[in-house]
Image 1 (cartoon, helix red, strand yellow):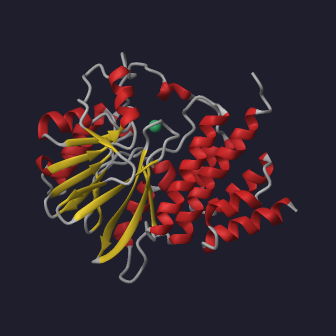
Image 2 (cartoon, protein in one colour):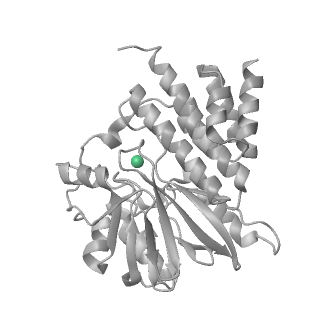
Length: 330
Ligand SMILES: [Zn+2]
């Protein structure tokens, strides 16, 4: 019975019949039902996200603590080659974390900046290797103020005068931090608003505020071109449950996943991107690109249904974790 009801809800969502609300109405509110719904939605594409959020969503909130960075890991554990991925989107990330350069008619919009220790080599060095000029980065959008994404913000601001875009609460957390930024903090610049468009030349990135992973987490919608064919990207800006485990926080997170699912559906997004390879398999997909034959779909072009399924995984795992709170009352 439970599976059946969940299936109907999932089907309604996938077909876009009545949106995420129908899903939540139909899914029985039990841990098992949410786990099954997440597993079904994950399919083969989102096993990393499922594993992180549903299988082992144990709180390890070191990222939310104001602690100084640890020792720099060995280069071969993180270094990845930069790559051109779409006509106007370039990967300048590491093996674990993504940083993307969106090229426009008037410069570059950079999305996320890795750690302080590898942003110089991966981003500045990577752009140069790809024949792009880092001094043309006009905007840097930081998905959220954790050290694996905001580590190069100060570098880009200081050296190239790039404007840094971040959610208000995450700017606050940077300013309040005592320990996280021993090499200095980026100065408060653009405070992102929900629905805001960051426009540069012929290109715009639409900001969707998705509080949850952090209070100021930003997700995004933008367009890339694949051999001239436009494709819409849904970029998920925060995924893991690295927040205090409360019912309210899981509800906020879940609402944001549904909000982003709706924004992705409205925009006809067929590409799902994240800031960790763990969640969007960026490194694996980039590795397959050189072998792509003419006419084959782009490895990042999963289709609208798969993008919808991604946000079912995150929302359903959050609902399961929320119900687990009741099993371990403090
Ligand atoms: Zn984070």
